[in-house]
Length: 63
Image 1 (cartoon, helix red, strand yellow):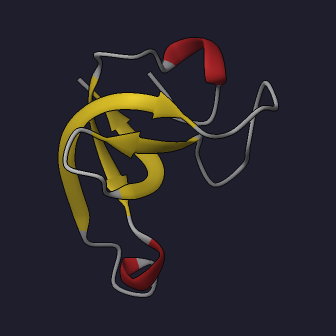
Image 2: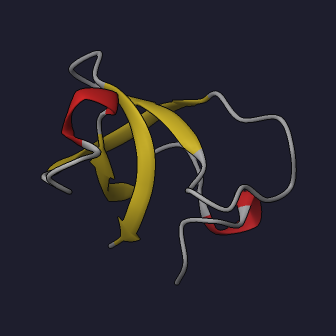
């Protein structure tokens, strides 16, 4: 499932996100979604979320 659609991302989902500072390298961080920060239905770079540990990033992989 692509992380570019808000309907695919939900609270409690296990995801891998790219943080702002990791965008050039593409390093992914894994975690569980506690808050969805993007209001639009889609975003070309991924839906922005906050993970349980407070990390904010854009969803690249779900599951």
